[in-house]
Length: 246
Image (cartoon, rainbow, N blue to C red; front, side, top):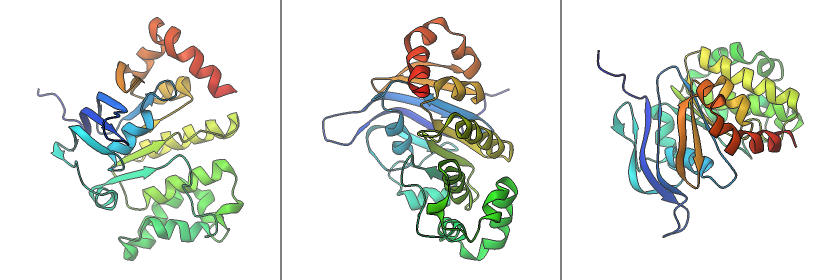
């Protein structure tokens, strides 16, 4: 039987923000249908840059990004949304002056006629959003804002959801809530690629994990396998987990 083709694939990416100063150095990953894949590593490793490169927010100088085997390199973010990729940035991921409903409507600006169907789907995943539809987003807690940001990205029914540090800055209680939400989204049929500072919890929920260091793949494997790899634990997970608790 032939090996399954990745849903989303980054191949040997060299990318960065300033000419001649690469952040990613020959970095690769694969996200398969139905998977959660987690990207962890020390600060400055290139984790968020890898996610942004996949979503057309960082210039890629070498390598390729493929969706279902077709190159999407060079496509603008709004085009990638129509291709089935959703993206939730770490910060400024909701419109605080708009209501919850208006935020969700912004997520559907490319297909406004699909509001009823898409809102029903997102509300089934996140009932709180339906309950707070008229509330201003700026009045939500950090965990609730993260839920809204994910809900808005899901309004276009993506097959892939990119999450950049979804638990950053949240209390342990809300961090756990976010991870449960990620699992719910995945169970609903969305493949998830997330960058996370809570490395242990990320690898616990991830089918596949990528440990980056200095823009390169340091370790790759099933999440559970990386959690039990003495080298990964010694070099990365101890300090990363301690930092996540601070």
